[in-house]
Structure formats: C-alpha cells, structure tokens
Image (cartoon, rainbow, N blue to C red):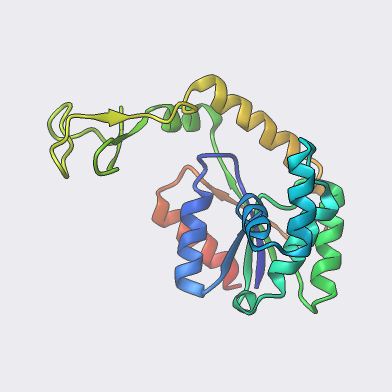
Length: 215
C-alpha cells in the first residue's frame, strides 16, 4: 500500500506516520531526510543534490524524484510507503506516477489531515518542553501539576522552539496551502483523496485513517 499523507505543520502527520509504521510495517519517505541520507551515502542522485546544494541552488524536481526512486528500490519498502512532503507540485505528482508505474506499484490513498487554523496556531504556540528530560507541556492543555516544575524529573527549566510563534506558524500554513493547491485537484479527480479531522483526539485520527486503509 502506498499513500500520501498531507497536512500543515502541527497537524499530527508525524505521529500518525509513526503509528502506521509500527502497525503496518510501512516506511515513511520524508524528502528532507532522504536528501540528507542520499548525500551521506553518496548515491548517484545524492551526489547531484550535493553539488546543487553546495552552489546554493534549489534541488530540482528531477533530483528529488530520483532520490524517491532510489529509496523505492530498497527492500524495506515492499510493505508500503507513506509519502511525506512529496509530491509538492503538479510536475512531481506526474513523476511519482511514473516512478510507481515503472515498479508495478500504485498510489492507493491521499489522506489530508484537516485543521482549524486558529486552533492549530493555539496548539503550536502554547507548547513547550522540559529542558532536562524533554517531557512535553502546553500553556492551556497540559500544564505541569506544580507550576514551573516538571512532573517527570522535577526540573524547573523549560524551553520553547524558536519557530513556535504565531507569525511563523501562519506563514507555514500559507506555504502548505500554496504547495498542496496544485496537487489536490489531480488526486481528487481520481477519487483518491480522503479527509480526516486532524483536530480530533490522536487515537480517533488513527482510527479514521485505519478505517480508510481497510476499505
């Protein structure tokens, strides 16, 4: 089974992809991670990407798709893959069709985690972690039992990601909409798109995705 998982930053794609990997043995293909891995491994496409990045250029669709193709040829993808961050353009969507067809594979589902933008901003902007053990907290939804003291390790030091601010989060959402706008109609026309409420409880989101994949 091969699926595309869509959703803006903070929608929970990473959590749901991890569960699919654990439950179904699928492999998550994240283009950023794969580019770094291909460069490190010195694959033919990775060397092309390294040269482009070293000159300050943007990695082309052909190079990104080449790295996807190299990864699809590895045996651990036989039980299915989750495309995360790819395709981002209509050209990449066309290249993905070619990559899958040449390997006798098909794209089965495109699952979009829908969000309420204002609620998602509040979710992301309010989160922080213990600087010592990494336990996660939230200003509104998951406060420490004792204010200013970590429940797990009793540390009094906490930290927030510098990009967890409203301006950055809304910019990321605008970028997501701009990037998904060209590809959603392509897959909608094929009847592949399924939308799940990404603001629901994590377990409910998992159940909704599982129900789609088990059809």
